[in-house]
Amino acid sequence: RWATHGVPCERNAHPHISAGLAVVHNGIIENFAPLRIALGAEGHAAASDTAALLQVTRKVVYLEDGDVAELTLEGFRVTLSDGTPVERPVNISSLSAHAVELGKYRHYMQKEIFEQPQALGNTLEMIAGGGGISPQLFGTDAVGIFGATRRVLILACGTSYHAGLVARYWIESVAKLQCTVEIASEYRYRESVPDPDTLVVVISQSGETADTLAALKFAKGLGMTKTLAICNVPESAIVRETALRFVTRAGPEIGVASTKAFTTQLAALALLTLALAKVNGRLSAQAEAEHLTQLRHLPVAVAKVVELEPEIERWAQRFANKQHALFLGRGMHYPIALEGALKLKEISYIHAEAYPAGELKHGPLALVDKDMPVISVAPNDSLLEKLKSNLQEVKARGGELYVFADAGSEIPESEGVHILHLPEHYGMLSPILHVIPLQLLSYHAALVKGTDVDKPRNLAKSVTVE
Image (cartoon, rainbow, N blue to C red; front, top):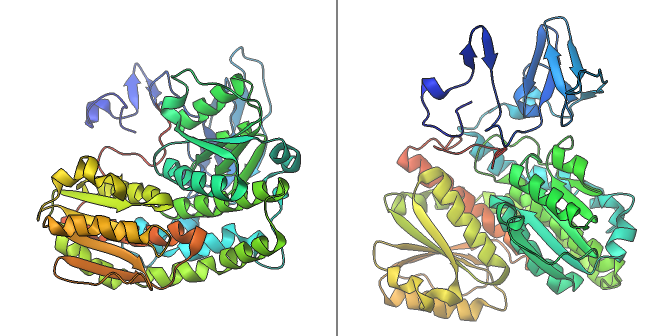
């Protein structure tokens, strides 16, 4: 592993060796991540991510804070820092080595984009039959905790933060609860006003994100003990720290740029929104039935959007040579514009920014010219007419528009205005559908530029250090 503080070079690469002692450390000394011990037939290994061990074994021991483990070819021994022996159980990971194989795809990111219908189907399996919205999906104590919740605080980083921003719109409009979304790395470094009636929701694909874990512990230290983790790894540190949990079933995500983890997080947050609304008497039987119908159909709807890849690939050819891009969205699709800009930055190295479309006149419009492609998320919702006005502002200034619209949006294609229609409008769940084309657009732009799609420079999959 490359050193956190230092250039990527052999001198800074682990292991560090001196006088016969080799040291491999996950992060700088201030910020370490929990380790796992893998028990293999031909020896034992340590890692900070279960997926890294699957080629060796599925038998894993999770170490607690303060544990010291000694590994030999014959076995292992765990003690506390004072030398006291302790027993840690052997767990059989639910992951498989097959799940992390590339298969027929060129890159893991492409594979994971195309796995999203299945990942969503797995995540929503508990409502696939006749099951309704049940708070118990989040834990046995969920009814009491949700019933006592007066506001929601979401803590997350990166793509997971964007999922939280979408959820804020859902929770406030459907569950009628005040919702605040904070960047985890900033939350604990300011003075906030704690409220014990707050449900603290932490979102992390790996469950090991250092800033999110630290923010969770900080919130608990302020007396906010109603906590919920939304995570893709059931054995992770964040899951073990919360009172409630929902484990998404996206499967291992290898590509650094998150795709299926994001959409399954949104599915989990939709379930959370409906559960909060139901417990607090704000979800009628008819509304619940309508939401369940949409959720059950979601994997099919996503599969139809993925089929738009050939046209999106042609779009990517047009602007992959640009240096900058502007993403626009309104309402609950503004976070999707943020996510689209992040994806493009991560893997194609094209500088991209996202704004609420209504903010164009407040500065970003000065950037628009023929060399600045503008990508817009344009669902057929109550804000569509206002968004059309914003798009006209861009067109009038010579900007080239790439618009992801719904069927029935009635945005005419013309010179400099390229329209891609998604098969259907999907109401509250529309953000899940609209992010798929942005993932594909970033992927194909990166292919044109020849960047390393799965391992972009300077980035790591799980940020286990501050």
